[in-house]
Amino acid sequence: MNDSSSQIAADLRRWLASAPAGARLPPTRSLVAEYAVSPLTVQNALRALVAEGLIETRPGAGAFALAPRTPQNQDFGWQTLALGPRRSPGVAEPTALRPALADAIALHEGYPDRELLPHRLVRGALTRAGRSAAALARSPAAGLPELRAWFAADLAGLVPAGMSAPAASDVAVLPGSQSGLAAIFRALVGPGGMPLLVESPTYWGAIHAAAQVGVPMVPVPSGPDGPDPDQLEQAFASTGARVFYAQPNFANPTGAQWSNARAARVREIVARFGAFVVEDDWAHDFGITTEAVPLAARDVDGHVVYLRSLTKSVSPALRVAAAIIRGPARERVLADLRAGPLYVSPLLQAAALDVVTQPGWRTHLRGLRRQLGARRDLMIAQLREHVPSAQLTAVPGGGLNLWVRLADGVDLAALVGACEKAGLLVAAGDEWFPAEPTGPHLRLNYAGPDPGRFGEAMQILGAQLAEHEAGDG
Image (cartoon, rainbow, N blue to C red; front, top):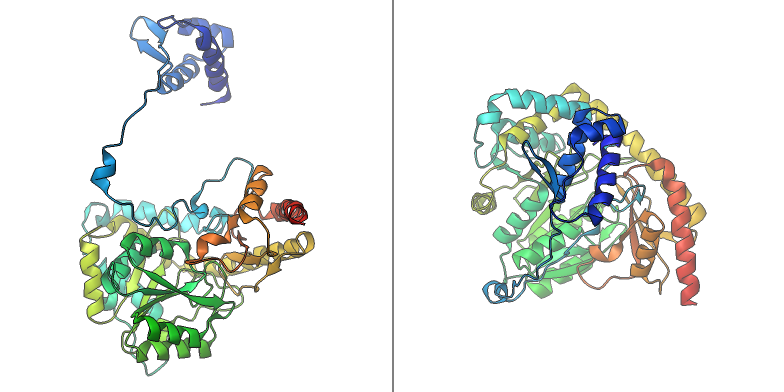
């Protein structure tokens, strides 16, 4: 509605608050004359009131007030027996998915701001895909051959000379990496069986997927340089696990990137135990000062299950990802996918392929690197100026987030709530731990909207943190 329609609707709501049921509203022509607007403007206001259940319109008679709806208590108790015991919910309501309130500074989200997306490429690709055969087609279960070939070639370009590169036949296109995680955990671990090793902290979505599938998790401590290989080896030996979920490049939430030596040691340990490492390369396109170097680029015998998503770097509206899996494990995962989504929309696949094969895609990525670097550095500078007691665990070489350690004793839930009341949305780090948190942390997204308000955001955080630290003392 425009401003005039909104004003008319607001005035009529006040009139309806004291009007009896069945009272007739002023005729449209009277409202047109009173507000000096067009009949369409009045009709838009009336449609809004109809949608709210406040009035009804009768052709040829006018609009009339409806009786207020009396809330009724509903009894859903029968569902208790039908549903049975509640499964572990994982992260029930992840902070990263909460919509931002109007005028709030949103540092809690897990996606880049739309200004950082290739919006012109996406709009053009969707238009062309809508006119193509993909708009009325069914995709093969493993995905469009052309898109599978692109994912394989993209990884193959990072494979050292002399090593075997992945082929299109190793690729399965997924409806987003979250669905892929659930399918992989079900296929390779299975509910109630052997445990899944995970870094701690790690991506909340992986925690959620494992919990929903019914897979027990064993946390392996992970710091700014990744997991300790000795502790990972001990975890494999003591638990009998055969799958390890990890983010070697720009991990969410910590921003950690493994060194080549650590990556080689992890690959050696995984191979020695006859296990898989599920590599989540979600931030492949978000390098700033370093490039993502996937474990899968040096995988010879199929120990690495590689996940690559385009959802965050292309558009949240294009939920397209891929898993590159060698050997019989690929068929296990595909069988699980066939029992669920069957296949990914070919329209979305065609649009995603269009975007990443346009000449403008590489140009966009170069500009994205500069923009992410400027935002990261700006937030770090403001954090250090206004929140000196917060400890930045590391300056990430890529990704979207800063991982900040607060002083022991800070009531994290109270701090996050106080920040929200002051107009700042931040994410408490507890959601990224599969076990007890090692201390109070915040994840701050420097790729979110309004970088010009980073200074204001850090002032709010610093003020609220000072109050809570003073309160503890």
